[in-house]
Length: 282
Image (cartoon, rainbow, N blue to C red):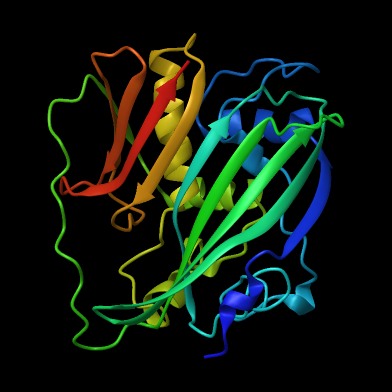
């Protein structure tokens, strides 16, 4: 494997306008009643993922539905790519109608040995600035993990039981329609989310994989439903275990005694922890 650390520090800048239709479509996908998304309406946390979509040409798409390796991201030769987690600082609102510039930088590349072979972790920093502002309204760190295809005899990490007794709970049915709609909204061509034959026969999963960002969005949506006036200053999440379509998943929340911290987590139908997260309120 070539020295991928030479990609550290590489950056790219893109522009987009935060229009109303993607927000209205995600609101419908999350089962909210129809409301107007007028210019100046603040976007809920994480809804910036509806913009800066990956507009790669069809000829640039690889066999897994992602863009072929190379370009801005390092050309990691391992075939499986997953969203491992993210960390956010929400410094100022991003609003419908804003002209937003995103500067993305490769912050780190790390190679490790795991139970099933080599792993490559890539951390990308995104700084989003609205309407020509000097300071970012949002700083995001995105953790990507690459790994080899599953092999017979691979040992999976032992599952972790989800905490019990959450103050907030919501059950969600992650069917193939929900996954398709979220893939369409984020222009995500990764085949593990919609191509059942590919995901089971090539990547070896038992079903369609629920998007990590979708689960994170559902966690933040739970907070928004339960504490609609709360302002989120920071958020971080870590994917613990894949979630698959079919059986319901549950998103949970537990406000801490300090009044500023909310622990959020997702679990599958067997009660295993699938995502662990923390929101910090202003």
